[in-house]
Image 1: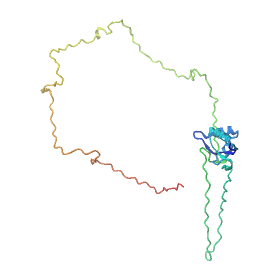
Image 2 (image 1 turned 30 degrees about the horizontal axis):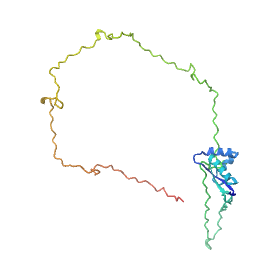
Image 3 (image 1 turned 90 degrees about the vertical axis):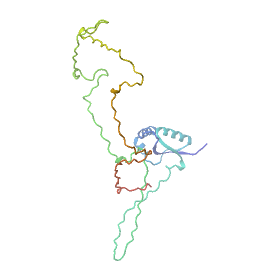
Image 4 (image 1 turned 45 degrees about the horizontal axis):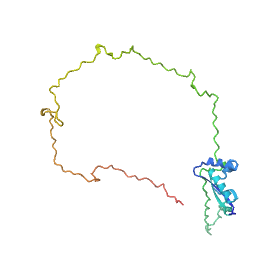
Length: 264
């Protein structure tokens, strides 16, 4: 059985699919601390949440924190990044006023000062990049006067009877109609249908299929179009037929204000 001790390290990362505000609220409930102490955990630096645990206990804590949305890791206590000595901060370089130099007698050697690169770190996703004293004040809540509002019953009209606009009544002219008996003639003698026209079809017959229905004297005269000799052919697919092409002026953008930045 392993007797090694482990630390649970949290760097401010959250599990994919969780919201930062929900993760912070769950951590407050798990550790029973206020919001300020939970916000101090989201700095991007390794923070030990639990120290010197056995492997089984550390795995249980890790599962609970992962369900809460906190991305933690288990590290041996003797090599935990939280126990490593922090790197010493470089001393700030103060500018020194140059001593007066007599140009006629001597020339002083000036040693260039190499600037010290600042130490940067990446904040966790959704973290506030400003300290608490630099954050803008929260907006004051808007006070809404609800003294003139009231609730009505769920059923019924929301408007009073005096507030409902009257609906105009449409005037419909109803003719004096009666229902006739079944089989009766609905038109009077003055409006009876016209008599059928008798057409004599004795001299009519049916032409054969495909026969011309017009006689020679009934056909229109068609004048043939005179076409000269054909001296053209078909060009192969994709050939240039000499069509007019639009004159497109090439773009010449001004890139004098652009520069490349070294990604490193």
